[in-house]
Image (cartoon, rainbow, N blue to C red; front, side, top):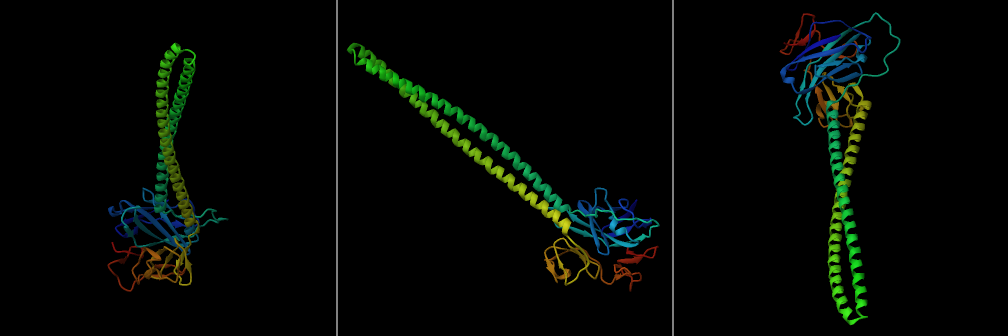
Length: 350
């Protein structure tokens, strides 16, 4: 079953009525039809009853499930809608008036309540967490690329070092041959001349081999240096990935703590200490969300502690028999903002 609402600019009205009966759960939905000026905004439905306050993000069809907590017992609950731009855009906020929805008494008897409470979701924090997830994935890809480059440079360095070693061995062998021929030259003058010539040739070859060995060693050192630089880059990239993952986990823990610990209060009290995420209603029917720990900081005059969620015109609300703020049944005078509909309820002027 769906309760159908129409939102035109900042005016919220309920479409033709159907009875809402208490004690139902996982059944009742609210659907909102929006005018064009709500396009591109994150839309949040606010449900309030006694000490309960829920902010439910609407899906792409403008729907959400009505929290079962506000459907028991019989009585009434309050609904309003808030629109906000996506993260990174201008701080555009659209609010609406609020409506009271009557809840009829059920004819059934239920033995126990559901175990899991309804929870509202914050679209801004989810968007932020997805941003950190994408950044971590990009850093991981860069680290993998640097790691592959380092491995390639290390292989080239190893090949150059091996070639340098072979050249050095060849130079040593040539030098040994030159010394042997020099000793043979001492035994025979004629043979010494021939051996001296051969020794000179061998010495020249040894010098050439030694030069080649030195060149290979230099290339090996350069390749080793490149490998060290690439390895350093890979280590830095990996460190960046770790830092990004740690930050994403921290934000996720903060988000879970905000959902799990944020309290909801009906009317603001100067003696109560409020925490970030707490929501209150002031005597004029306006609602505010706490930005930092606050004690005796009136929401209407303390913007550094409170952010306005919805506001209401003065002298149009009163307390009902349940202690809730509701539109006056007979306003002192009709204004351009309020009128009585065919059911005798106070509604915004069309």
